[in-house]
Image (cartoon, rainbow, N blue to C red; front, side):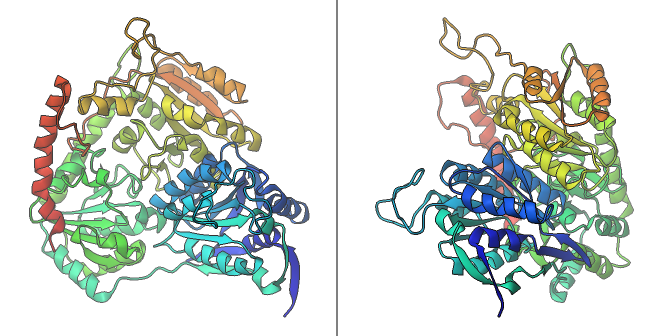
Length: 631
C-alpha cells in the first residue's frame, strides 16, 4: 500500500478537497471552501495547510477570513441551505473563545437540519504545559475542554487526539453531512499539536469520494394507509416544510396539489414551495400565517405535513388544527419528525413520496366547493397584503410598506434574507414569493445577527441572484462587522436596515404579556426617573456602514427607498439602505396564538389582564391537545 507523508491538518485539507455529493446524477463539491479566523490553536496547523493548498492547487478549497466565528458558521449554513444541503463550507477557529463563539452557529445549523463542518482547534493532546493559554481546566475530567460544549448541538462530534483517529473521524463527518435525515452541525475538534504532527497516510484516503444521496420511497403499506385516509377526507390540507425545497420537490408538490385539489400552506422554511399566486396556495400557516391558511387549518380533518418538523409557530402552539377529529399524515425523510403528533408515518424523500402519493390517489380529488373556498380565502388575503404594502402611513412608513417596496423592486429570482425580530413574521405573512429559493428566513433558531452573514452565504451560493438582506436595527448591531467580509470578498448584498429604535418584536410581545415594552426601546436613562425612558438613542447607521467600506443610502419614506434600491442594483459591492419606520404599526393579524407564559401573580394591572387572556387561550390549547394525540 502506497502512502503519503502529511501533517494531520494537511491531510484534512486534501481529503476535503476530494469529497463530492451526488443526487439524480448531478455531482456537487461537498465542501466548497473554508471560512475561518486564525489563532494559536489553528494557525500553524490548518492555517499552514490551507496556505499550502492555495499555493499548490488554487481554487480547490478557497479560504475566506471572517470577522466573528459565529458569523462564519451562519455564512456556511446559509450557503448550505441555498444549495439544498448538497454542498456546504467548512469553518475553522482557534481554541477557547474562538471555538465557543461557533457554538451558537452550530446550534442554528442543527436546529434547521442544515449541514456545516466545524474544525475548532483544541488543547494539546500531549499536555506539555497544562494549562495552556485559553484552556479551561476541569478538576475531575482531565480530557475536558471548552469544545465539549459542541456535543449537544452537533449531529456528529469527534476529537482527534492522534493521527490514526483521523480517517474514521473524517468519514463519519462526511456520512453525517450527506445524511438528509440526520444532518446538521458536524464538529471535528483538532488538538493543536496534533494538527502539525506528520503521519504516513494511505493514498486511497485522498482519492475522489462521491457520497450518493438517495431518494428513498415510502413503504407501500404506509403509503396505502395515507391514501385511504386522504380519500376519506373532506377538508384536507397540505403543510409544506423546508424538506419540500431541500428535496427539490416543488414541481411534484404543484402537480400533487393540482391533481388532488388539496390547498397548500407553508411553514417559514417551506415558503416558496408554491408560487404565492398559485391557485392552491393559501400562504403561510400558524402564528405568523395568513388568515386563509389558518382558517383552513382550523377546520382541516386530514393534514399532510411534508418535510416539516412541526415547530410551535407552525401549529400556533398546538391550537391551529382545532378540528377534534383531525388526523396527521407526516411525510418526512426523518422518522423522528414523521412520528410527531401521533401522525401516520410516511418515511421517505419528499419528492419520491409525493409522486407515489399522487399515483395512489389517481382519480380522487377534494370537492370543488372546498377548492373554491381556498381560492376565495387566498384572494381575500392577497387584497390584505396589497393594502398593507400601500398604507400611505406617515410621516414614517410602516414596516409592511418597506417590505412591499422591496418585494416590488426585486426580481422573481431575487432572494430575501432575514432571521430575527418582527421582520420574519411580517415577511412570512406578506412576502410574495415567486421562486422556491427566493425566500430565506432562518426561523428555526431565529438568531439575531444571522442576516448579514447569512446574506453573504446566500450570495456565494447563488452569485447570479440579487440578495436583499432585511434586518432591524437590533439585529444589525449584533453582527454588522461582517460587512467587511463582503467588502473584502466583493460580495454584492443589498442590506435594507429598518430603524425602529429598539427591539420591535419583543416590544410588541412585551405588551401582550403585560410588561409594557420594558427594556425594548433604545432610550437613554432619564435623569429624574432613573429608568430607560429618556431621549431616543440615535445611531447613524449610514455612517457606520460607510466606515466599513459599504456604499450607503438614507431613505426617508418609501419613494426614497424605491429610488435607493434602484441605484443599489447598479452598484458593485455591498450596499446598505437605512429607512426609519414607525414600530407601532402592526402587520395584518394572523388571528392565531403563540404560547408565551404570563406571570401568574402580579401587581401590575396590564400583567393581570394579560394573564386572564393567556388563561383563555391556554384552555383552547388544552382542549385541542387530544387532536394532536389521536392515533
